[in-house]
Amino acid sequence: MRALAVAALLTLYGASAKAEEALLAKGESVYKQFCSHCHGLDMKNPGTSSYDLRKWPKDAKETFVKSVMEGKGDMPAWGDILLPEELEAIWFYVATRGGKEPPPQASAGEG
Ligand code: HEC
Image 1 (cartoon, rainbow, N blue to C red):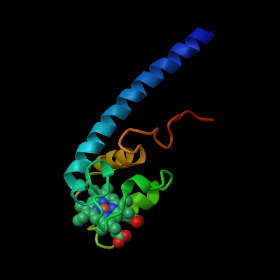
Image 2 (image 1 turned 180 degrees about the vertical axis):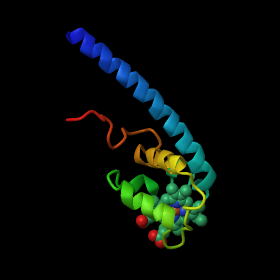
Image 3 (image 1 turned 60 degrees about the vertical axis):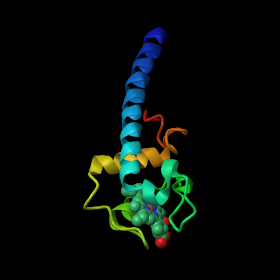
């Protein structure tokens, strides 16, 4: 019984780890394409007036999405440019600090 549960968990983990890898890779490439010239490669802020995305609170996805889609201050709106899945991937990239930290809801299991 227990061995079965562990095996099931491992399978789940393997699948989601793969999905996360893909999401991260996509997030990184979309970020490089649209965001890096202002926010810096690897989110290392080049010292301009743009926000340092490595400091963005991981639990603030809604505000992130709103600011990115509608624009903020000197930042243009991205709502007409980014596809929903691209935004999702960028969020994953930012929230994991480029894959260096676990995502906000790492264990998606109920409970
Ligand atoms: C043209 C330069 C430029 C580009 C390109 C750009 N940003 Fe920004 N971004 C800024 C500036 C400047 C600010 C600071 C805005 C302010 O608070 O006045 C900012 C702020 C932000 C913030 C913080 C918003 C807030 O609520 O404080 C987020 C999140 C963000 N950018 C994400 C992104 C993402 C994701 C992309 C790529 C899709 C991107 N930015 C592309 C210039 C840019």
